Image (cartoon, rainbow, N blue to C red; front, side, top):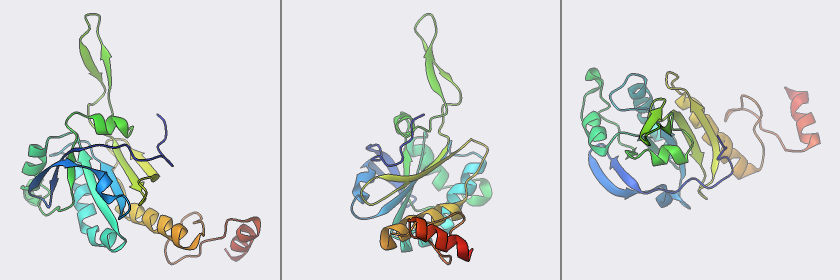
Length: 210
């Protein structure tokens, strides 16, 4: 699978549910270009087990993303009607009621395919009938997209492995620190720690202090 790092995020227009209740046609990430950073993440399916913990965790930290000028957008291969039903279901019944960021419906699976996170491949039998190899859902992919629409960070987890929302925030901070100060961010960097100048002298100075 080819990496999308440093490339423009694949374009799409799709139906999405926004504000937890409104179905919007022709939703696109292009609306954020020049205006906001984007954390665009995929999850396998609505009404599952690990997925609600992730979507609710992103909602819990939504204000922190918004303070950094970041739009959070989710996506799965379910329909907009499935999204809407799940968004209408209380948490104590396995729902995600209260999630307000957009959730894209990738019912055709083309968005997941274009971002390289579709867990299945299509093959054909001797009679020309198509069938799926693997689960026809999205892996847990996450993409940090800058204001120019370029993917600067991505991580893809297998289906059983939930992601860290705190790590997504840390990567936003690292990218924004680099863009503002021109300093690069070493291992385990966070906002309260030193970054370093990307020169031999800068690295030597950093290592001498740590």
